[in-house]
Amino acid sequence: MTPPKTRRRTGFVGLAAALSLVLTACGDDGGGSGGAEYSWRLAEVHPENYPTTVGDQKFAELVAEKSDGRITIDVYPGAQLGEESDAIEQVQLGSIELTRVSSAPMTEFASGMGLFGLPYIWDDADHMWRFLKDEDGGEKLLDGLSDAGFHGVTYMDPGARSFYTTDKAVRSPDDLKGLKIRVQESQVIIDFIEALGASPTPMDYGEVYSSLQSGLIDGAENNAPSYYSASHFEVAKNFTLDEHMRVAELLVMNRDIWDSLSADDQAIIEDAATEAAEFQRTTWDAQVDKDMAALKKEGVTITEIDDLEPWRAAARPVIDKYGDEFADYLAKIDELRE
Ligand code: GTR
Image 1 (cartoon, rainbow, N blue to C red):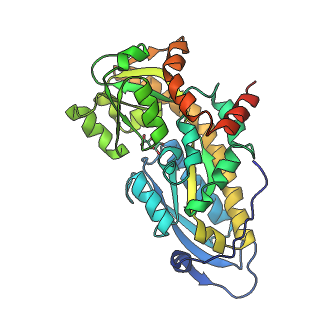
Image 2 (cartoon, rainbow, N blue to C red):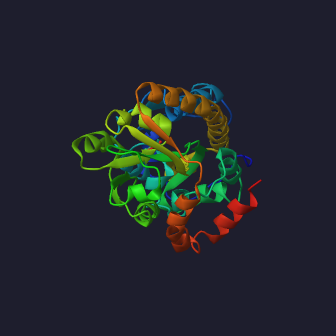
Image 3 (cartoon, helix red, strand yellow):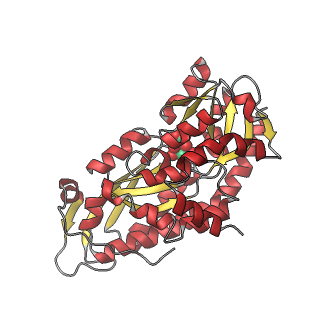
């Protein structure tokens, strides 16, 4: 990662910032002890033990440790504070200080995040991470959240998303034609599903299980840990490993609160986030292996895709549509291939 950012803004410090400041101790404002005390909430849609939740917890622990207990963060997993779109709005307003969300629904607030909805652009996870850590790549996209009232704290690993369907196993893009596929709230992803000839149906994550079960949708797409932990495999037993997108996970904070912090506290948060993200990343592959084994045991039909070319060709219109908008980022992504 690039060195900790200590961006200071002199603008309005929101009500939320004032409210989340529990107590200001006398004396200096730096380092672990002796600064202001804060108590924050962090919203997460995934259950406990899911890799991003584990990453959130690690972040909270590290922040507490590095601030000598001055800054406490309570993680609320399982969408207790609302679905992703609600959590994002609440963080923007400052009624929740932090949330870990997918970059897909952030596209509505910062169009640059739409980049992560483009299909088949990464060689593998390492390639994506080289981009995420690049100051003209992922770091710049994080900075782009600021105009919408967020501070982009860090990325986490999103794994790769693949399709799953209720009735028949999908072996080629043609098999998706006419199917209703649930998507995250992002126009780029909607366009991708349309390019494949399927019918995109945006909805909250929490509604996917019942919608698969009732037949409102014919399929959805996600990484193996989500497909498994949300039990979607129970009602959509065909998993097609085309690994079309890596939709970066984000940890975001209300920008006014961020701006109101001392440079030392900002550094504590940046350092803790960098360590927590590295830690989350190391847990990812093992979780995927574990969940894939469990899915096999549950009788899920797993379809491997050896040749991605027909998929890339079918998705070409969406790359063409967004090619100009994301030209610089796509050039950077190409430059970072090995
Ligand atoms: C997961 C992601 C969640 C949520 C979910 C979805 O992979 O971690 O934050 O965005 O996908 O599809 O809604």
